[in-house]
Image (cartoon, rainbow, N blue to C red):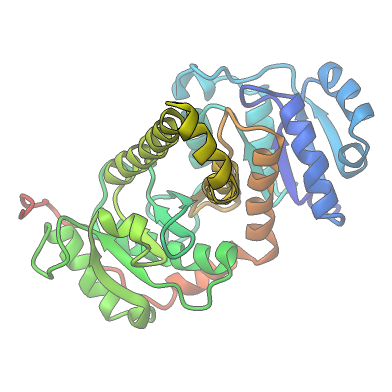
Length: 349
């Protein structure tokens, strides 16, 4: 086999596909001149775009896929569409033609296909969705963001190990601090899942990095570099944070447009507000990663633009270049994970 492509790219996933995808690849090809991409999608629609975006054309090999997974298609239905751009791109990773895949398409379909086709790494019970967000002290990694609604202590420990490697790989941290999201910071808070996971981490090779339990307000405060939780709680926290940012943006627009004086105040405050906008720009945090699989799987937001998609490509490149999966295997080999509990007691408030 010839050298694998760096990343396979689902050209037809997302609201602005395929133009946003190809425009994002133009930026990515400039940032990563040695990378090669397998671009999967409708050749008839991709050909005119690649004539406009020369760097993308030089970096890509096109593989035709006539069908695309609709945004509202159920995962079970998506599994049956073998000729879709998403499935063909994922097949390329499973067949070791590419190290990873990036898609802005249907999240549920991507999760289902990746789990079934690419499969989990040895020693990983369940993959987890991880993402990066802003905090008062810098960027913070959070997982799981919704891939697993219910988790046991073993899953939480695995998430912590994967989150540690992810923060080292993508954020460049040498010893990221890790917190378990709980209903309180005291050791007796929460249920047995969290207490067992905490005890395992305190006796592991990353014990010095384990902060202990953290609460919801610690996410935005940046108390730890990595926040570990189950997928139900993580998804609720993620959507709550996104809603809070939109609310803040809307309220600022209302305040600074309320009167002539407010508009003058906006002009004076504009440099600082522009810095804030850049800091909180969702495109900067685009690219959630499904960790624990035999290949890199990056989910771009479906409504992003070329800049946001290029950032998702950057995340995928970091994972490949820094041998993410090999480092996960090394971490798992150094920890003894407790068996899953037979039952989960009621939560202590």
